Image 1 (cartoon, rainbow, N blue to C red):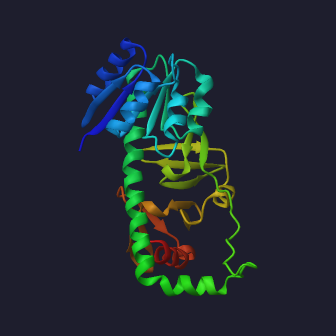
Image 2 (image 1 turned 60 degrees about the vertical axis):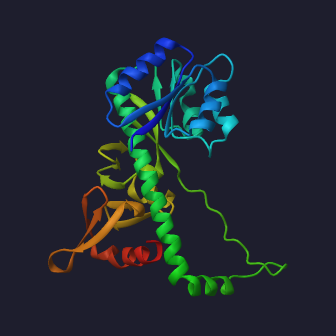
Image 3 (image 1 turned 90 degrees about the horizontal axis):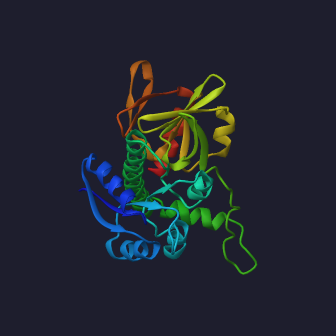
Length: 278
């Protein structure tokens, strides 16, 4: 299925340039153009595009006004486009996939579009994973859930008290090719210790951040990530299978085919997590 794209910019020349670059991308269908924020809102509601390339500054409703009108949760994956870099942080605050600063070159455009492709593939995979988890919980987890609720202290009204909420890390700031941008933690495939740094792997791209594995692990949602080696933390949604290796060792196979060694120290922990969250 082609990626259905909406191009939003108040300048016709800018829209034509985006169209030219999109023609170089396989499996892309530009379903509509919008020259204003109000047109963009109407088109998104009617056409429901897979991806929006959205200019930030427009005369009626700006790009952030489009997001506000639709609601961040209802907004399709979005690449913001603007001539002003001061909007970058706010763009990522409303869940932008990437941020194209005018004038951008074809290589930078391809990089942003590939990031959007990776995001959409992962969201689809993650959604499927959540459905599988829900089904398994329904089939084999009802007794366990009931027991947990029974043992949980009750509120004065007799209702189960919710567990305390913990705010986990949801994005990382990384540097690449002289740029500083944010990577969603949910888009990370795995983390790898690299000396005094941690290498963040997202698809075919990796970034170095100046952190320790211990500090990164402490900030990650344990329902999303698991440590499989002293030097490796993996996104559970990316795990395809475990395979036996030599001398009783195992390897973790990711959905993209990557093979990562599973340390015996963490094997039992991972297997219990896979049973619980798979």
